[in-house]
Image 1 (cartoon, rainbow, N blue to C red):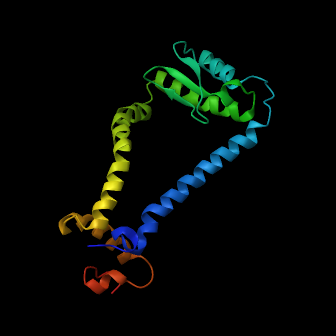
Image 2: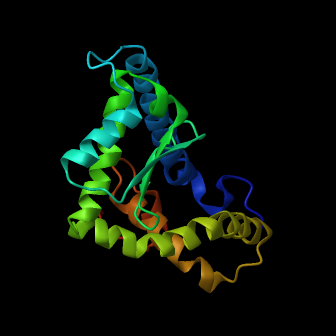
Length: 188
């Protein structure tokens, strides 16, 4: 069966794809603009992000974590496997308020790791699964759209998305379009 509009998701495809996409883009813009704004404000201590991270690590008596420079813009992170604190070039070399804030935040993750903070341990346990899932996701989405548009999915495989879409339609304010098929009695 060919779906001319919404790839088989009806008119709610924007809800499933567009809203999360817009929220993600909005969040990224906010982070980047905050970094630009506070990256121009010089820190009164006049120390760089790398110096800040090393001082915090020393104060926490953590001596086995290396502070290294990475070339990714806002690619700052702590890698607990290598015990390395990766700071982007802007954070590593700049004595700005934004650089100190980011360096201190990432150093906090190193402190959590050294203190065996339970939520960080749980996050570390699921990282391999999320890495595999994130690599598979584009293929799943493109494959799903292809099979949906071409009608190669059997009706039984369409059941879960119909239930999700039906549930949203049943409990959405306004006219209950899904109830016309007799699958939902909510609001009737």
